[in-house]
Image 1: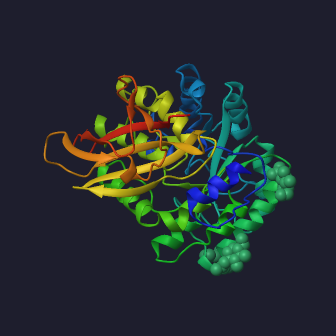
Image 2: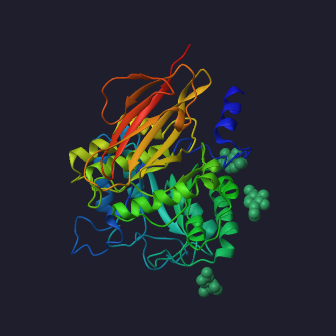
Image 3: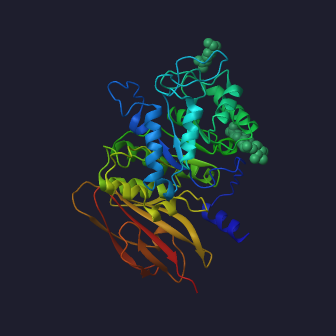
Amino acid sequence: MKLQLLLLFLTCSVIVVNGLDNGVARTPPMGWMSWQRFRCITNCDLYPDDCISDKLFRKMADLMSSEGYLDAGYEYLIIDDCWLARERDAQGRLQPDPDRFPHGIKDLSDYIRSKGLKFGIYEDYGNYTCAGYPGILGHLKTDAQTFAEWGVDYIKIDGCYSKFEDMEDGYKEFGQYLNETGRPIVYSCSWPAYFESSGIHANYSLLADICNLWRNWGDIQDSYSSLTKIMQWFGNNQDRIGPYAGPGHWNDPDMLLIGNYGLSYEQSKMQMAIWAILAAPLLMSVDFRTVHPAYKEILLHKEAIAINQDVLGIQGKKILTITNIDIWTRPITPIINDSPTYAIAFHSNRDDGYPYAISVSLEELGLRNAKGYSVSDVFEPQGEEIVQIQDKFIVKVKPSGVVFIKAVPIGS
Ligand SMILES: *[C@@H]1O[C@H](CO)[C@@H](O)[C@H](O)[C@H]1NC(C)=O
Ligand SMILES: *[C@@H]1O[C@H](CO)[C@@H](O)[C@H](O)[C@H]1NC(C)=O
Ligand SMILES: *[C@@H]1O[C@H](CO)[C@@H](O)[C@H](O)[C@H]1NC(C)=O
């Protein structure tokens, strides 16, 4: 009861979200998805090690399990677009490209699951996937059954080649067929990304009833500018979409770019921190064979992951901007004296070369515990410091980087 009152207070709203009742995604899903890094590479002569194929996914499964990612909580290995054959089989069922997936999907799924991982796949609600392979329209029931037979644990349903007016009912209907298979499957829905990009507000209450997560906005590309555009959209729309995040149903700002070509080391820590604040699904899309150890360390960062996975499931917000440095906060556990702990990220939009100093107090950031807080740095731990809420303290933020701290209330 106390917790419920607190949650109402924290979200400052009376929106009650019950959400989809399929028992999965109680914390933001964590895993790896092929799209951002491997896209729709289907030419295995030109890209023998990178093409969307059985070989690629087995290799990624091996490394995801042996290199510590699974132990850190990343459990879903998800095939994105371009796995399908151009035609359905003689019985009208989906089938993979025979050259690139010679053993079929069930065999690959069994292999992935034998590594202790869970298996995810991609389809599209329309007549075709975005890359032009067969979509599920007209075959919803058969395809839901096929996915369950293949041991699918997570499905992303995209929205290309479908009509806006069909999407709400159509995604709902497919969700019903998934439910009827009896297999708990994480259901990722893309229709808000199509609606919102066209200036139409999606119905997030409906989304939380039907889907475990949903892409809100455009695809992430391998660049800092793409990343910050998505962050800006999340900040601008946080009061409208934020209340619908919670255990079982999440807003999805898209994959982690960390370890690829487009983000610097500081920018990579920044994405990890902001995704933790946003209670965002943590879906890596990196080549485990070549990822630099420094970036791997960010992906595996225990405390950042713990903040992301916090059981309250409250999506954080951008609450203040000082001299072009955005401050994002998220209430998390433990709750002490009825006050939540806070994760706080300072992200600099500045590019003037040096770690820029700002002075701020916890009170200005909305923290209220009268006895103060024990504050520590998530990425650069140097012990804990007691800070009273009115104390001004200095934070120095590197250009396009982040300072990520945690403030635990001091008890009586
Ligand atoms: C999907 O294909 C069917 C059959 O060709 C067609 O009637 C329908 O209009 C198509 N739907 C969309 C959204 O393009
Ligand atoms: C199907 O839906 C019912 C009612 O919401 C729920 O209790 C059940 O757990 C769901 N089953 C699966 C497999 O999702
Ligand atoms: C949004 O969906 C809910 C069902 O969860 C429904 O009750 C409500 O009327 C819908 N809102 C709009 C504006 O369509």
